[in-house]
Length: 115
Image 1 (cartoon, rainbow, N blue to C red):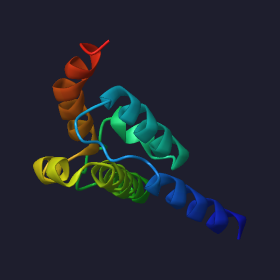
Image 2: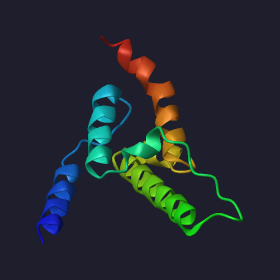
Image 3: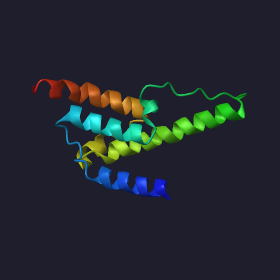
């Protein structure tokens, strides 16, 4: 029951995050990364996707499915933390890693020039 309470608290805290609208990218990125680490899914940002093969073991199949699920969780949280306009632009990016890299490429440089 304590886990359920913790997940509810995290969801409530997450809703308090300001949605990313193109400004303060570095802060937003750190907050999202912390959330993904807390959910134990941040590994998809820097871990290659397991290859799916025809002769894979059950353990390999489970690993592939877990990665797919965790990638979708990450991407969903990232998109949910964006303004509607940015959500519309980035919703079609296929993986969390690609989304993370696209956002860094576009907004990291803009954010850094403000300091």
